[in-house]
View 1 (cartoon, rainbow, N blue to C red):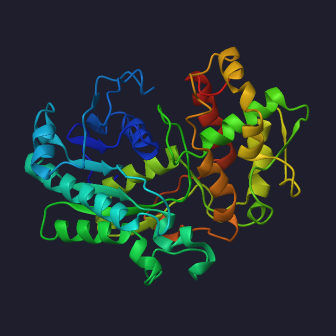
View 2 (cartoon, one colour):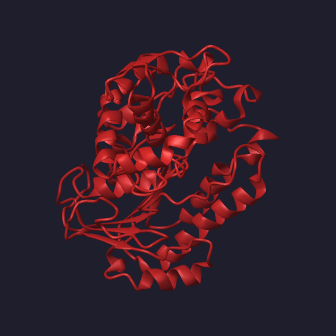
Length: 391
């Protein structure tokens, strides 16, 4: 890749235990080569060893707990300054986020907290990382107002050049002030940034994550396999959500794209890029059978009104949860701690209109990876089985 010199680059990942940050931390060890980064530093809030994180045992990888971006920049500077060789950092991948409701719910607090996160992080990194070259920053479907459904008009496929969602709905989208803050802070500096826009992410996390779609889907299918007399498993979402286009992405694809963008700054600086697994988008009708097949099940469409599927069916089996978890040697409380609401929303109301992304810009800069979307689920399920999240 243009301008890349092996053994001179150091990656710093904020939020290394989250669904995006974990994948970036993992990818940076091997993509585009195993020598691209001389050192990969992952920052987490809670203590997490490399083994607990289920990351490769690699001497270049170092995890540091204690990250608290709600603190002021000076306190964060002091935290960063204690990290060995922090001054060698060249590339920052920011994947820290406060999830506080959807839409208008707690939006002012959500905006302030997330804007403060990025402002404090930038100030602290600038204080201790004189070799800084590039940041990647993840926004996503919320940029296009997707959480507001039909209240916001949009043209599909969704393009980066689309105008921002106007008030009043746009006032609740915290990505706008975050990107504005990052743009202002980068003015006249030796570093730049890019805005990476995925939609729903399919990936593994070492701990539970409210935005993890694969985990509740995998547990729903596993539980159905064990407890239902039928081998036909219904889609957990709605009839309308079954056939509309969307542009979900595997976390591994997303992570590689973050790294690719950061290493090609001459093409990417200051720009925004959509990214997904499938260029034309896909539907649940297309993918659900292949996802269910991993468990030896036949994936079928939504149930009729009054019948149970998805979390409602899972909840109906609640008296069997504890025994099922123990019998399969899974992590304690895995069913209780899973983000069922996210599965319900993403396969339901969130999918009841086309929201496919245009990937022209990602392809224009030379990123050609096109993973098999269904196999991406299977790879994540394999990892979850190995980590005792799925049986």
